[in-house]
Length: 220
Image (cartoon, rainbow, N blue to C red; front, side, top):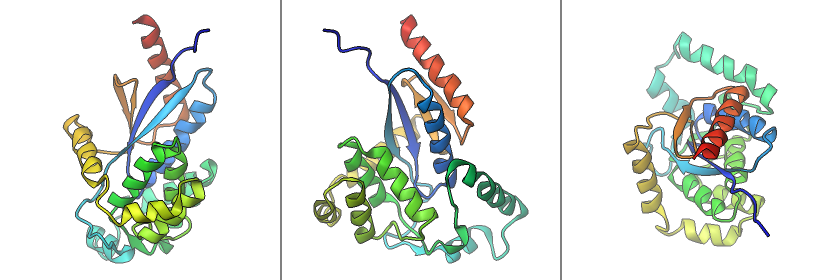
Protein backbone atom coordinates (compact mmCIF):
# COMPACT_ATOMS: atom_id res chain seq x y z
CA UNK A 1 0.00 0.00 0.00
CA UNK A 2 1.31 3.45 -0.91
CA UNK A 3 2.05 5.80 1.97
CA UNK A 4 0.90 8.76 -0.11
CA UNK A 5 2.77 11.96 -0.95
CA UNK A 6 5.13 13.45 1.58
CA UNK A 7 4.00 16.70 3.25
CA UNK A 8 5.22 19.94 1.74
CA UNK A 9 8.04 21.31 3.90
CA UNK A 10 7.86 24.96 4.96
CA UNK A 11 10.61 26.42 7.14
CA UNK A 12 9.89 29.51 9.22
CA UNK A 13 12.69 31.64 10.65
CA UNK A 14 11.25 33.65 13.51
CA UNK A 15 11.76 35.31 16.91
CA UNK A 16 9.08 35.23 19.59
CA UNK A 17 9.54 38.92 20.50
CA UNK A 18 8.76 39.93 16.90
CA UNK A 19 5.08 40.96 16.63
CA UNK A 20 5.15 40.61 12.84
CA UNK A 21 6.24 37.01 13.30
CA UNK A 22 3.02 36.24 15.18
CA UNK A 23 0.95 38.07 12.58
CA UNK A 24 2.79 36.29 9.78
CA UNK A 25 2.23 32.92 11.42
CA UNK A 26 -1.51 33.52 11.73
CA UNK A 27 -1.71 34.54 8.05
CA UNK A 28 0.23 31.42 7.07
CA UNK A 29 -2.03 29.17 9.14
CA UNK A 30 -5.09 30.71 7.47
CA UNK A 31 -3.67 29.74 4.07
CA UNK A 32 -2.57 26.31 5.29
CA UNK A 33 -6.07 25.42 6.46
CA UNK A 34 -7.42 25.75 2.91
CA UNK A 35 -4.75 23.71 1.17
CA UNK A 36 -5.79 20.23 -0.06
CA UNK A 37 -2.38 18.75 0.77
CA UNK A 38 -0.33 18.09 3.89
CA UNK A 39 2.10 20.76 5.08
CA UNK A 40 4.81 20.51 7.70
CA UNK A 41 5.97 23.74 9.35
CA UNK A 42 9.55 23.59 10.65
CA UNK A 43 10.70 26.21 13.17
CA UNK A 44 14.11 27.89 13.09
CA UNK A 45 15.51 30.50 15.50
CA UNK A 46 16.39 34.13 14.92
CA UNK A 47 17.38 36.68 17.54
CA UNK A 48 16.40 40.26 16.80
CA UNK A 49 18.84 41.40 19.47
CA UNK A 50 21.33 38.79 20.69
CA UNK A 51 22.96 41.42 22.92
CA UNK A 52 20.09 41.50 25.42
CA UNK A 53 21.53 40.12 28.69
CA UNK A 54 20.54 36.64 29.76
CA UNK A 55 18.24 37.95 32.49
CA UNK A 56 16.57 40.42 30.15
CA UNK A 57 15.90 44.12 30.71
CA UNK A 58 12.75 46.06 31.61
CA UNK A 59 10.75 46.48 28.42
CA UNK A 60 10.17 50.23 28.82
CA UNK A 61 13.89 50.85 29.39
CA UNK A 62 14.78 48.76 26.35
CA UNK A 63 12.34 50.61 24.10
CA UNK A 64 13.55 54.01 25.33
CA UNK A 65 17.15 53.04 24.60
CA UNK A 66 16.15 51.83 21.15
CA UNK A 67 13.75 54.59 20.09
CA UNK A 68 14.37 57.45 22.52
CA UNK A 69 12.04 58.97 25.10
CA UNK A 70 9.47 59.79 22.46
CA UNK A 71 8.88 57.00 19.93
CA UNK A 72 8.90 58.20 16.34
CA UNK A 73 5.71 58.70 14.35
CA UNK A 74 6.70 55.69 12.26
CA UNK A 75 6.95 53.52 15.37
CA UNK A 76 3.61 54.77 16.71
CA UNK A 77 1.95 54.08 13.36
CA UNK A 78 3.39 50.56 13.25
CA UNK A 79 2.17 49.81 16.77
CA UNK A 80 -1.28 51.21 16.01
CA UNK A 81 -1.46 49.09 12.86
CA UNK A 82 -0.55 45.94 14.77
CA UNK A 83 -3.16 46.67 17.44
CA UNK A 84 -5.73 47.22 14.68
CA UNK A 85 -5.11 44.04 12.70
CA UNK A 86 -4.44 41.87 15.75
CA UNK A 87 -8.10 41.19 16.65
CA UNK A 88 -8.81 40.15 13.05
CA UNK A 89 -6.29 37.36 13.56
CA UNK A 90 -7.24 36.46 17.11
CA UNK A 91 -4.27 38.36 18.55
CA UNK A 92 -4.51 40.72 21.52
CA UNK A 93 -1.37 42.86 21.59
CA UNK A 94 -0.75 44.47 24.99
CA UNK A 95 2.42 46.41 24.24
CA UNK A 96 2.09 48.87 27.11
CA UNK A 97 2.00 46.07 29.71
CA UNK A 98 4.97 43.94 28.60
CA UNK A 99 7.28 43.71 31.65
CA UNK A 100 10.58 42.47 30.25
CA UNK A 101 12.49 42.35 26.98
CA UNK A 102 14.05 38.89 27.25
CA UNK A 103 17.03 37.26 25.68
CA UNK A 104 15.25 34.66 23.53
CA UNK A 105 17.89 31.93 23.33
CA UNK A 106 16.20 29.76 25.94
CA UNK A 107 12.81 30.21 24.31
CA UNK A 108 14.27 28.96 21.04
CA UNK A 109 15.70 25.94 22.87
CA UNK A 110 12.22 25.10 24.13
CA UNK A 111 10.74 25.46 20.63
CA UNK A 112 13.46 23.10 19.38
CA UNK A 113 12.53 20.48 21.98
CA UNK A 114 8.82 20.92 21.29
CA UNK A 115 9.44 20.52 17.56
CA UNK A 116 11.07 17.17 18.28
CA UNK A 117 7.69 16.06 19.65
CA UNK A 118 5.64 17.58 16.84
CA UNK A 119 4.60 20.54 18.99
CA UNK A 120 6.74 23.34 17.55
CA UNK A 121 3.86 25.51 16.35
CA UNK A 122 1.91 25.02 19.58
CA UNK A 123 4.99 26.03 21.59
CA UNK A 124 5.63 29.10 19.45
CA UNK A 125 1.99 30.18 19.77
CA UNK A 126 2.15 29.77 23.54
CA UNK A 127 5.29 31.91 23.70
CA UNK A 128 3.86 34.65 21.50
CA UNK A 129 0.71 34.83 23.62
CA UNK A 130 2.64 34.75 26.89
CA UNK A 131 4.86 37.64 25.77
CA UNK A 132 2.49 39.91 23.87
CA UNK A 133 -0.84 39.27 25.64
CA UNK A 134 -0.29 37.76 29.08
CA UNK A 135 2.68 39.97 30.12
CA UNK A 136 4.83 37.02 31.19
CA UNK A 137 8.62 37.08 31.23
CA UNK A 138 9.43 34.49 28.58
CA UNK A 139 13.12 34.75 29.43
CA UNK A 140 12.45 33.25 32.86
CA UNK A 141 13.17 29.53 32.89
CA UNK A 142 10.32 28.77 35.30
CA UNK A 143 7.88 30.49 32.95
CA UNK A 144 9.31 28.60 29.98
CA UNK A 145 8.99 25.27 31.77
CA UNK A 146 5.39 26.09 32.74
CA UNK A 147 4.47 27.00 29.17
CA UNK A 148 6.17 23.86 27.88
CA UNK A 149 4.15 21.75 30.28
CA UNK A 150 0.95 23.41 29.10
CA UNK A 151 1.52 22.36 25.48
CA UNK A 152 2.41 18.77 26.31
CA UNK A 153 6.11 18.66 27.13
CA UNK A 154 7.42 17.31 30.42
CA UNK A 155 7.57 20.40 32.62
CA UNK A 156 10.09 18.98 35.09
CA UNK A 157 12.39 17.68 32.37
CA UNK A 158 12.21 21.01 30.52
CA UNK A 159 13.21 22.87 33.68
CA UNK A 160 16.13 20.49 34.19
CA UNK A 161 17.33 20.89 30.58
CA UNK A 162 17.07 24.67 30.79
CA UNK A 163 19.48 24.59 33.74
CA UNK A 164 22.11 23.00 31.47
CA UNK A 165 23.86 24.02 28.24
CA UNK A 166 21.81 21.51 26.25
CA UNK A 167 21.30 22.63 22.61
CA UNK A 168 22.57 26.19 23.12
CA UNK A 169 25.32 25.62 20.57
CA UNK A 170 22.90 23.96 18.15
CA UNK A 171 20.45 26.87 18.33
CA UNK A 172 23.25 29.37 17.78
CA UNK A 173 24.53 27.34 14.82
CA UNK A 174 21.02 27.30 13.30
CA UNK A 175 20.83 31.09 13.61
CA UNK A 176 24.20 31.48 11.91
CA UNK A 177 23.22 29.05 9.14
CA UNK A 178 20.21 31.10 8.08
CA UNK A 179 22.15 34.34 8.34
CA UNK A 180 24.69 32.91 5.88
CA UNK A 181 21.76 32.22 3.54
CA UNK A 182 21.08 35.95 3.53
CA UNK A 183 18.16 36.09 5.95
CA UNK A 184 18.36 39.36 7.84
CA UNK A 185 14.72 39.88 8.81
CA UNK A 186 11.81 37.90 10.16
CA UNK A 187 9.46 36.27 9.68
CA UNK A 188 10.89 34.44 6.68
CA UNK A 189 9.05 31.46 5.21
CA UNK A 190 11.03 29.12 2.97
CA UNK A 191 8.97 26.91 0.69
CA UNK A 192 10.31 23.49 -0.23
CA UNK A 193 13.85 24.82 0.40
CA UNK A 194 13.62 26.67 -2.93
CA UNK A 195 12.36 30.20 -2.38
CA UNK A 196 11.43 32.51 0.46
CA UNK A 197 8.62 34.85 1.43
CA UNK A 198 9.61 37.54 3.91
CA UNK A 199 7.46 39.59 6.22
CA UNK A 200 3.90 39.29 7.48
CA UNK A 201 2.35 38.66 4.09
CA UNK A 202 -1.45 38.21 3.72
CA UNK A 203 -2.90 34.71 3.63
CA UNK A 204 -3.48 34.84 -0.13
CA UNK A 205 0.22 35.45 -0.68
CA UNK A 206 1.04 32.30 1.28
CA UNK A 207 -1.67 30.35 -0.54
CA UNK A 208 -0.14 31.29 -3.89
CA UNK A 209 3.34 30.35 -2.68
CA UNK A 210 2.15 27.01 -1.35
CA UNK A 211 0.44 26.13 -4.62
CA UNK A 212 3.55 27.13 -6.58
CA UNK A 213 5.75 24.99 -4.34
CA UNK A 214 3.52 21.96 -4.93
CA UNK A 215 3.50 22.62 -8.66
CA UNK A 216 7.31 22.79 -8.66
CA UNK A 217 7.47 19.42 -6.90
CA UNK A 218 5.10 17.88 -9.44
CA UNK A 219 7.29 19.09 -12.31
CA UNK A 220 10.50 17.59 -10.94
